[in-house]
Image 1: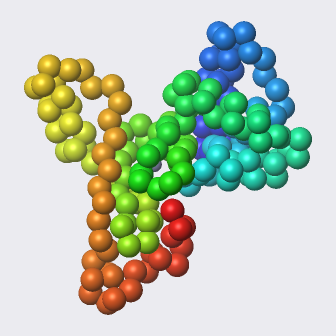
Image 2: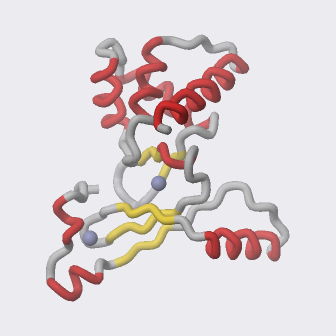
Length: 161
Ligand SMILES: [Zn+2]
Ligand SMILES: [Zn+2]
């Protein structure tokens, strides 16, 4: 599954690059490999670290030049979930309609999909006279666990955000 999605990611990106007259490079390959071998949301600097594990010659400049191409070609989604750094989300290829719940206590991000939400969003958008293209819902929430037990279990694995 993961390999298949990386393969199609590569095809989509190289199709997009060809249209812009840009060539494929082993560094771009390593960046795609890194971006789509994880289900986690990542920051640009984290992608750099992951890509360098695959190909040491990947430079920061290449990562920062390639990221917008990945976003423009629709492979990665840029997320603004309220942290001070932009996050990139590799999961829209396989789950194009997923949404995010953010724990305001530990900043943990939980992905969810719900067919009812999908229908409702489409209905609302159409009712207002638009055709839905790009939808993302963010829910900020407190953990029930924190409220009941005074501790958030997600805190251990959550990042500082
Ligand atoms: Zn996501
Ligand atoms: Zn939490």
